[in-house]
Every structure is written in structure tokens, then in C-alpha cells.
Image (cartoon, rainbow, N blue to C red):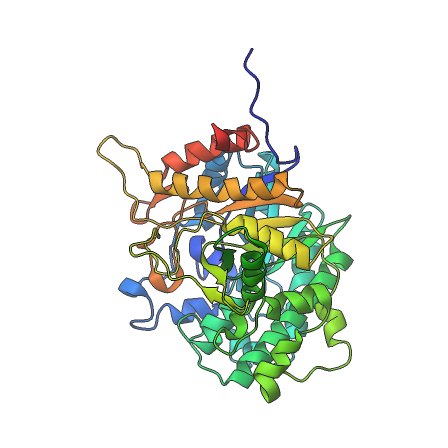
Amino acid sequence: MPTATPTPFAPDFTWGAATSAYQIEGAPSADGKGPSIWDDFSHRPEKIAGNDTGDTACDHYHRWRDDIALMRRIGLRAYRFSIAWARVLPEGDGRVNDAGLAFYSRLVDGLLDAGIQPWVTLYHWDLPLALHRRGGWLNHESVDWFGRYAAAVARALGDRVKHWITLNEPQCSIGLGLDRGIHAPGDRLSRAGVLRAWHHQLMAHGLAVRSLREHCRGPVQVGLASTGRERIPETNTPADIEAARAAYFEVTAEKGVDSVPLALDPVYRGRYPEAAHAVFGRDMPGIRPGDMELISEKLDFIGYNSYSGERVRAGADGRPVLVPPPRGRARGTLSWLNREDDCLYWAARFQTERYPGLPFVITENGYCGTDWIALDGGVHDAPRIDFTKRYLRGLARAAAEGVPVAGYFHWSLLDNFEWSEGYQPRFGLIHVDFDAQTRLLKDSALWFAGIIRSNGAALFD
């Protein structure tokens, strides 16, 4: 009898896929939903490639039952999705829209009936437009707005949802939306303004943690999904490893809010890194008594979205030096998505060494291509399979070395609205015809089903 391939992943390892509300739901005004900053931004001329919008996207609002059936075919153990804040609170605060909450309640019930754990993200970039017009994240009141929103969702879903993520990638919602202005709401704030909005969003995260723990029934697992660009040692020498670590956690004016420890140190250590005060000086936000205690409310796992990275070596003085990338290096159809096989390994290792004591969950990882249905009727996305296999082998290596990796969510379940890039880049395990709204499992979905069934052992076949 052949011996089963061993797997380093724990028997209760979470295998899932992820989406976000604006990218898949459509139905922007159905059942009393209010507008979000993305509803507004995507309708501005020339802001989105092809002048696309998320008005229909994958029409998941009406097709969620079919989508759950496809999740079952893949064998997902968990599904990470976000709540559209303005679907629950059309004005962002005040009146609760029961019909909006009822949609998510039906979705949660459908997932649980299918044996799939719901992992709910409270904020995936779609701030209610009414709150943006009141100052958005620049307004200190945004902390309380978010706390009350979290409480409303927790009261409605907290009897069944046991896994929560407060924010998705504050680096993007603040950096791309309020600094560079290429995402909603499209603003270009001063550095002081960007950092003030950043501080408020981290405080909002902390208040949401408190709201979830107060209003959910029974114990819950709460985390935050951060992101960054990994720094990978060119060799496994101690010098290169330390150089990569230093580069990964450095704070620079050039990186701004993309500096990894600017989010993670306050959340997991209760303070901004000293380098932030040196680099940003008077632009750093004013910190009131209790702010850092709020931001550093205890979490249950480290959530992290990982896609790309750069290789680093130690220079003659030991300081980190970026290694020039090879010409024509492997990448997806988006310029920022280059393939570096060891991303998940070093992200998991570096973060759990700096912030020990918590399990580590990859809350997003994936590959974008220009997938199409072949003449034989299938979607043969071999690059996605190869990309994901390489990255997951790195995560398996971390698990084998004792790093407490606890879960992996593929981005994305469905081809979807890819923000300012429109519909051309396809990240999904499931192909979506955006005109006919038909779905088709890609080869990668069938491959991922085998990975899940084997709890990762098939990565080494």
C-alpha cells in the first residue's frame, strides 16, 4: 500500500478563498443600500480602465446561492467576504437598513449549511459616501462611526460568525485613496493629513475589536488584514537574512504608509516605530491618552495579504541592498505582481518572529492573468496553478519549521472588478463572463480542490 505524502499543515488548517463586496456584489442601490465612495469614484470619467464600474460586477447579490454551490465543488473550508458598510447603514451612521443585514444573514446561513466557515471583513475600502462628505477618515468621529457599524453587524451576525477581520489593507485604502489619489475617493492629502487619517483608521480598528467582543455571542477570533511587499534574502546566509529583515521593517518617507511596521507595530506592540517619528517628524498624528491602548486591542491571529517581493542582500557595510530584478522576470498582468516563490515563507517567518504568540493566516494571495475559455470549453490557467503551488510550498516550509501558520485564502474566488484596472485582470479560481453572468471553474479551481482534499500534501506530488 503506498504511503500517504506527509503534510506540514495542521489537520484544522483553514483553506479558503476571498472576495470583497464592491468587487463582486453589484446591486448598488438594491433594498435601500446607500452609495459608497467607490460608487461615486467609478462613475467619474477616466478613473477606471475602460470606464468600468462595479454596478453589476459579478451580480453576487442575486447569485450568491450559485456561488456557494461552486464553493462546495471546490471544497472550500472557509470563505472570506466583506460587508458593504452602506448596505447596512445607508448614511454610514444612524439608521440600520434591515434589508441589507438580511442579505448577509442569508449568505452566512447558506455558507454554514454548506459546511463553509464565514470569515467576515468589516471594511474593504467602500466607505459610505455620506461619511466621506463629513470628512471621512480625516474626521476623528470616524472612529465612533466604525465602532457603531461593527456593533450593528455583530448583533446581527455574531451568533453565527466566529471569524472577523476589521480592516483590509489600510495601506491601500489610505495610501491609494488619500495619498496617491488613484483609488476612491481620489484625494491627494498632505502627508500630515494622510497620517491623521491613518491613525484614525487604526483607532477605528481597535474600537471595532471591542464592539465585536461585546456584541458577538460566544467566543470569536478577530484579526486585521495588512499587506506589504516582501523582502527576501538573496541567500540563506545570516547576513542576507538580517539585511532582508531590516529592509522589510524599515520606515522611509518614500514608502510612507506602505512601511510595514507603521501598521503592525501599533497593532501588535502598542506604539509607532521610533523611526516613524524620526522620518515623519511634525507630520505624525497627535496621539491622545488611550489612543495606543485602543489600537493595540488584543487580536487572535495575524492576517496578511501577500503577493510580491524584492530580493535583498547585505552590502559591504551590512546594510540592505536591493538586488536588481532579472530582465523579463515572471509577473502577472499587473505591473506590481511579480513572482517571488518565497514570499509566504518570509512573510510568515519575519512577522511571527517580530510579533510572536499569534497564529499567522494568509488572508489573500493570488495571480492575475487574462484567462479565457478555450476551444475545448475549459479555462486552462496553468500559470496560476504554478504560481500558487510555488507560494504554498513556501508556506508549507514555514509550517514544517514550526511557524504557526493557520490558514490560507486564495484571492480571488471569482474574476471580479479589479478596482481602477476594471475587468481586464482576472484573479479568480472561477471564470466569470461579465455580460452573460455565467461561471466556470478554471483548471486552478480543480487543482485547488485537490490541495484542500489532501490538506496540502498534493503540493509535493
